[in-house]
Image (tube, rainbow, N blue to C red; front, side, top):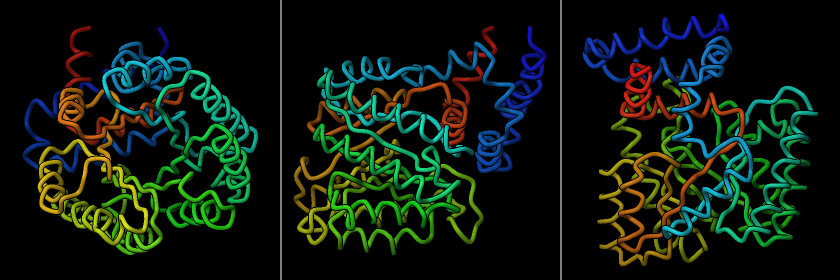
Length: 341
């Protein structure tokens, strides 16, 4: 047994003991959320957890597999149940140009496989995986090759949003591709409702008729950059959704992906949509693979357009930890599986 494995119980049994004793609930779930976000970026924790079969098995609930073919097979199953797919080749924050080029080439192959298979799927990309933190021009040039292939296959690319340190650089690449390079609605952007700057970004994107995915946000951010309380983020999410679903925004060409698993927010948006007479084809609900599957299928059965975010690849650890941070039920699922071993 590897020595890293022997350290795993210290980390997660401690979490389970704290949680079971009720201490985290007493002091607020935000402490658990912040701890898990810290662990998502901690190299020492990644080394411990990534080698564990139990962690790999539980992560398989949220990750389609390690290869593009795994993601394609998952997409076929979701398509058959009436849901579209966004695929994501996992990886972020690369530190050398060779790794960025390798990620670009994998995404090019993914676009080819989507086209060849005929599945209903587009692709989401993190720019730090393509070299944004090395050189923004490197990421832009890699994106240009990807956009060219996507256009060739009549497909779309959505640029994911990462931590706030790269928000403006991410938007700069998006606007360059959309406006200067002329990719228009073939390229979209993600906006995080917990960032204080997002209202200004959304108002500009609404005026531009952009293709937008609105999510809450899943990175640890300082209070002056992001809302600290869930209630603040939820209120801002609904306010931003109303802007993007307004008559003016839709007339400009906005197509919104409402990315949330929060049933209260879903009910609020449904009421707004009904009262505003907005047809189901004007937007879509988006959810993560493996989370709230019954809710995903229920929405699709009710006639709403639903798109599932399907990640794949070997770099699953940061993604997995952020999913645990987002929802306590995910952590309990992990802990309960660990305790069965």
